[in-house]
Amino acid sequence: MQRLLPIVLQASLALIDDSPWQALRQSLLEGRGDTVFQQAAQLKTDLEDRPTIAVQRAQQLLAGRPANSADWTVEDWLIALPVVLAVNAVIEESRIGGRSPRSLPAGPVLAETATHYLIRRGPLTRPQRGGWLVPDSPDGLLVGAVPIRKRLGGASIGLQSPRVRGVGDPPTTITIVPALETPQDLAIREVAPSSARAHAGFAVEAMADPARIVKTTLGALSRGTWVVLPEGSVSPATLTALIQGLEKRRANTGLVFAGTGCHDGYNRAHVLGPSGRILWQQTKMRLWHVDDQTRLTAWFGHPPKHALPYQEATNIGETITIVDLPKAGRILIAICEDLERDTAPLRDVIRLSRPDWIISPVFDTGTGIDRWSGRRARDHATRGATTIIATPAALTRLERPGDTVITVGLITLPSGLAMPLTIDAAACGTGVAPPMDLPR
Image (cartoon, rainbow, N blue to C red; front, side, top):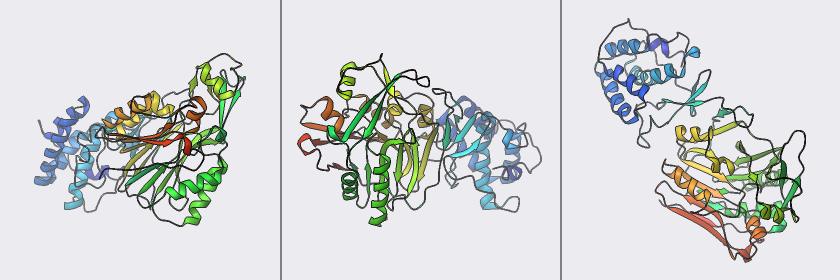
């Protein structure tokens, strides 16, 4: 980006009143997304008709910005990026300046100021899903900002956008592997308060046979399938077994969202490619507080020994990972409480990055359209995200042993259609994996 700016600023300064550039600047500052979309189209036309004058207008709009873009504020970037990208598209065609400009970085994060990340596809750039303000630019357009550092339980929040190659097709089928199917598959330990932890805690340990989980997962994988496992279901041993199983399978399609488990003291999800490679990870950022004595008694096998509430006995993560797959789109993982609370900074990231998919491994007694998870999924559906929630069967079997049908998954589409995935309680322990074909 820093190499691109001198090309934009090469023309001599020319003051042109009431240009579309000035109107665009005002709309950006006022946050009028629909107006920005229309004005940018005019701006692009202006560039194509009179490129030399248009570059002069661009310079006027950028006048007053620090010469080094590393010193730019959020406002500087919000003003400049539409101009830079529009000029970039014209330079690419007319070769103003004699050379092609350098492309923007790949991934959602395009730039960073001292206080904010600037990311693609925010609400100003996507008033209509799938549309770009600069349609001819392969880089798209950014006018959204997400705070880099927002205090969250003492943690500083970062944002990552790793590049993922070799996997990209959208799924045709979603399969939920509950993994923890019976009460024997699960152990929940009571953890006493300590000097480092003010609350009493609980620790979830997956006791299910890794071989059964691997067999069920591999059996569920087929062309076009994404397999999702719930929170707390993937121990380090199970993760290793899944990786080894996928390596032996030697397939080239399918993704495994390998639930979460306690890895090095963190509640962490791993996404595995069809060959077993770890594509990216997401660590849980919000801890669950439980103050229901009946529930805790069922978990521990005895009444809780300490004052309520109890808190997850894990560390919190500091990084939100956003991944763009070439055809499937943008993916974000929100682990249970991260989805439930819908608070900053994750709320801001979802609002501005507009993911196409939100994958949510959950540790709860099922899910449904009338439960908190269903309500959150509907909220995100209005912003265009397909939300996939996976829960274990074991917790329902432990807390509500009389249930004969257990909901272990919920898929909510941008259309608002919610599709629950259920299993028979009698089948638990046999390696169940309910699939759901997505509407074409």
